[in-house]
Image (cartoon, rainbow, N blue to C red; front, side, top):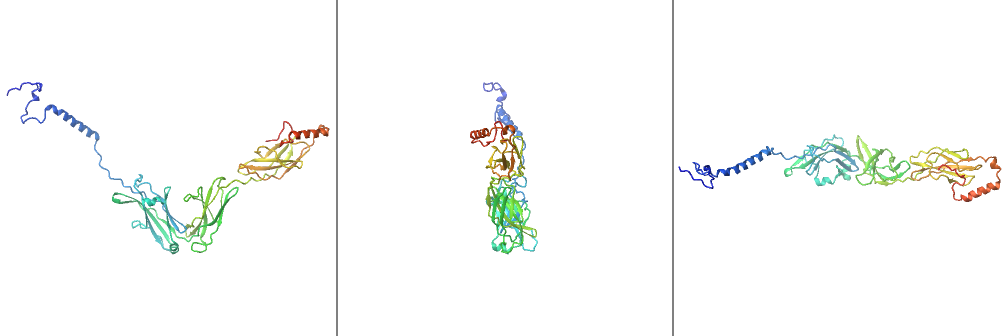
Amino acid sequence: MKSQPRTADSGGDPAATAIHPAGPLPFPRASRFPRLALLAALVSVFAGCGVQAPPQPPRLEIPQQINDLRAVQIGRTLRITFTRPALAADGEQLTQPLEIDIFRALAPPGQKPAPPDASGAPWRSLTARGLSGYTRAGKVDYPFQLSPQEFRRQQGSTFSFAAVALTRGFRGHPRRSVPSNVAQAALLDVTPPVADLAVKASQTALLLTWAKPAETLDGLPPSRLSVYRVYQSATGKPGSFRLLGETASPHFEDKSFMFGRQYYFRVSAVTALHGAVAESGPSEPVGITPRDVFPPPVPTDLTAVNAAGAVDLLWNAGRAPDLAGYNVYRSADGGPFARINRQRVPTPIFHDTAVAPGHRYQYAVTAADLSGNESARSIPASVTTPSAGAASVSEPRQGRQTLAHGASRGRMNDPYPFRSPGRGGRL
C-alpha cells in the first residue's frame, strides 16, 4: 500500500487519516475528548447529589384528644365547654381546618348513666366555620338550651357527652382523634335569675345585696338552694366575669376593691342534689366606681399640758390605712376654733409655742386621709398658761395694752396672733 502524502490538514499525522478496517470511524478521534469531558462532568454531578431518599408518605393531621370536656347547667341551658385542640397527635401544629363531633347519651331518673357511643352518628357536628363562633381565647363554649316542655319532661335525667376532634384528608376522609373524657350533668330544677342586685361602697368593702328567690323554674319552693356565686368583671362584657366568691346568705362583701376603679358584679343561685350542682341564670349585672368619701376615725384621748412658754399636745394615733396626718385647732379665751397648722401634722404630737401667758386655751384635733377627707374634731382639751413673772406684772397696764394693740394691728391677717418674734408652733 502506498503511503499517503502529508497534507496541511493532517498535520503529518497518519492516524488522523487512517481508515479503520471495519470502515470509517463515526467521528474523528480528536472530537472524542469534548464528549468524554461532558460525560465525566455529569457523573461528577450525580455522584455529588448522593443517593435520593425514598418518598415520604403525607402527614396525617390527627388532632390530639380533648381531655377537659365539661357540662354544666345554667338555668335551662346545658353548656358544653372544652379547650380547642391546636396540635396533632404527633405534637406538630394543626394546619387543616378543625371540626368537632359531639356525642350524647341520656339516662332517665334512677338509671345509671352510660357513656355515649362515639362510633355512631354524632349528636351535634360543628364545622370549622361554626366552631369559630363558639370559641373565645382557645376555649369552646357550646350552649344547648332546652325548651320549657323539655326541661320539665327530662327533670332528673342525666346527660352524658363526649367529643371527637377531626380534620379531613384526601377526598374529605375524616381523621379522627381519640374520644374525649365523658362529661355528665344531671338536670335540676333551678331557680330563676337572682333579682334586685344592688351594690354600694363603704370605707372597707363593696356591699352587695339581692332578693332571695321565692320559687324554682317549675314553681316549687327552692328547698335545694345551697349557696350563691358572686362573679366580678372589670368591663361588664359577656365572657369577662370571673368567680369572686360564694355565700350562703343573700349578701356579700368584697374587701379586695380599690377606690377609683370600675367594677361589675352578677350573682347566680346554686342548686345541689345528690352530688349534682346547677346554677340559675345570671342576674342582671350592676356596676360601681367607688369613691373615697369616708373620713378617718376621730382622734381620741387628746391631752394638753404647759411646757415652758408653750403647750404640748398628745393624742392616740389613728388606724385608717390611708391616713395622711392631723390638723390642730385652737380656741383662746372662749373664742372660735381656728386651725393653727399650715401643713398636716404627720405624728400624734404637736408643740404650740404661739401662746401667751395667763390665757385659757382649748385644743381639738382632726384626722385627714389621702383623699382629703377630714374627720370631726376630737373632744377638746383645755389648758391655762401661767401668768407672767413679777417684772411682767409691774409693767404698766397701758403699755401692755398698747403693745397688744400694736401687735394686733400689725398682724391683723396673721393666723398666729399670739406668736412672739422668733418663736412658732410646729408646722
